[in-house]
Length: 235
Image: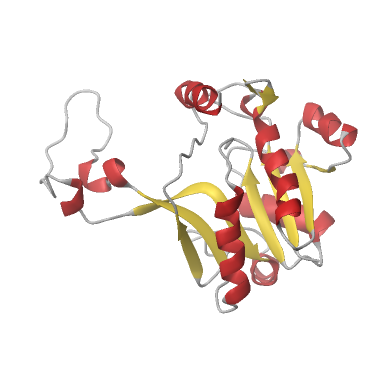
């Protein structure tokens, strides 16, 4: 067995009420990630099990109607302070045992590109010394060198680090699109700890993590503005 593909979709959201159930051009927001996961099985010469971890009855019914594996999330795993590693571990222990890889899909990202996932999958298949692969993008205009601490009274004084973007120290950020883990390493770490008390970012995912750089349009919906951008772009 090869890939345990987990869509995570909890009820709570502070910025947008019922965010994962928002309608985007005739579909629930979470549907984009579910359909993407189901489509991967057709593109890969591998077994892909799609599962949805949620505390929402609407999503449970959606999955039951379509014969999609639904994993009920306990209340303590549906808080805004819950570590995503604990949600993955819970789902894997219930339904993902025996799968070589774990693919994590956030339900608030409707912009999906199967070829970007294939880059991560192909890399890990060819490079067994890596434990995980995460999609990354260049920070570009949102480079930390051009950012200030939030202050609605005045712009803080800051030493100029570069007038042109090309002069700045280049940085990358995780865009949320692809998270692909070797299950063996992840499960070993989680069992030893009992929970995800991270001190280093992504440390439960691997000691050696490959950044899969891309320049695709990514919309991670956290605000009403993101929601409007997604509706326009996907339309």
